[in-house]
Length: 113
Length: 109
Image (cartoon, rainbow over all chains, first blue to last red; front, side):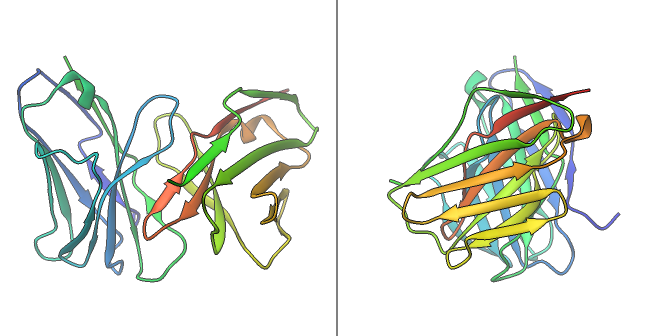
């Protein structure tokens, strides 16, 4: 399967714990995006990378959130001291630079209890 | 700030009919507009893109129109099938993509 892969698919964590999600983009794609989606809403932009450089961060991305793409390939999104409001689907997408179409992964469903 | 509005009410139609979904936007003049399909528990899948200089775009049973004066796009599925049941998202480019909340479509057999 050469699509965007996200791991894990589901994560249940207790409030206050740290969680980390991984995204493996399509191999030739140099852009990688993270979105968050809550029930009944469209995906909300969090951040994006051009190769290993993080070029933009949304105001939604509080200082408890950090994303990395160390070698310009896979990316990780970490949430520290999780809160119930962090419960959502976290989506990763990738594209080629200048492309109009983004390819999404299946998402990681986070539940904070 | 840019805003995208899609009909939040679910659309229920009978198999074989044409489904029409609406996307309105404000405070923006996009070079193009995209439509995605999203099934429950899955990521969005790109369907169609229409550019500002195109009035209409077709792909199989899908048709999209784009009226930059009204700031509106219409998304049509002709001869709808139960397998078309999903949420359809309108999206606009801004150095990152901005999505509407989506419209849930149910096609009854």
